[in-house]
Length: 283
Picture: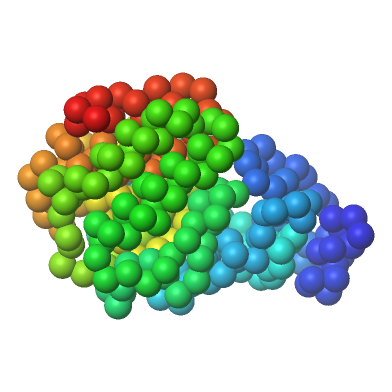
């Protein structure tokens, strides 16, 4: 079936207009107008690995378990995800950053029984394992850092000598990382294009990669591509104080994970970024 037929089968309504959008990394994205003049977002995958039903489940989980603004899911299958259209763009001015800090501090107050999640999730198009784990440092080491390093090495994009250095580095994480008071629910893929805002307020977060974690891994990711700056961190710290040493040290360790995700997907300059962090910690 073509896109129009798929949407009609899912919703029982025939689209009157379908307009392609840019920015879809794991699936084609469209804005779709329905007969009642409302519009929705459709993501369409080719069925070759990307499972949009997992993205739909993550959005529904955030909607059910948190106050984070995310789009309502109208339909989800492995190849088709239909969502509420949310107005906004990714221009994150100071007011937006302060609002984001309030929303994420609230999200991070949601407690889990363990690190990980009740199901495996995705980060972008990549599998993200979430076995229930009592120790955060153990979870981060085995199911984030080493898991993605081995995936990147298997793809041929991470050199074997760098994998070996990461393995040695991972044996010493407890020298720098802290166990949090409790596992916190995180969005998991916190960078600019996954945030929508208008008139100085957040309207929605999209493309999650959820699990229960130390909130610092979320905060770290938000600095990797300069998504959030001082306005965000000042407001967040007022609501949930960040222990000393995060910006100076722990942030770089946590950012090894999204960097390895990018090595696995793209290779290139991201390999050098991983190596620089290892050198920083003398590995």
